[in-house]
Length: 180
Image: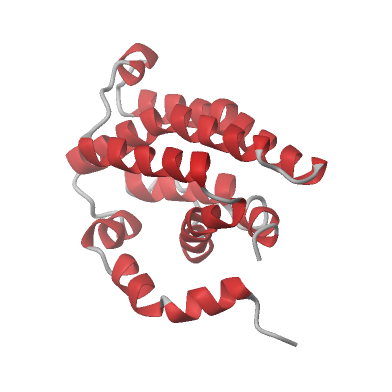
């Protein structure tokens, strides 16, 4: 059986994957040692990213070749708005942040650049050009499938909750299979 195209890309990009996985921010986030001010900034930027990400997913739905793919994108757009926003609002409260504070956060330059990139791909790319985003996120969630415990550092609690929301069995395997 021929190797899947996505598997070929993953294999060819191994050096890049190792560099991403070895980044100090991700290592500290996973270990629960990321300083709280950096973690809070990350949470705030992730929150403001959600609206744009949901809109990008809607654009993916508009390009869907069939009802199954349209449903997939629509569900994930709704999930970004309902589930993840609710999760971030709840988590923001644990950091002492109100919903109004979350809604008033300006996009940082990296967040804006990433959103602009995703919007450009959504407007001009094919659905297959989206797959790196899904594989990257779900790849980390698969490896970081950690339990959320009361004694865990704040970032570990976030990752544990996020891994249940974005775990490949719930998200990536369905999405990724559409792009192989």
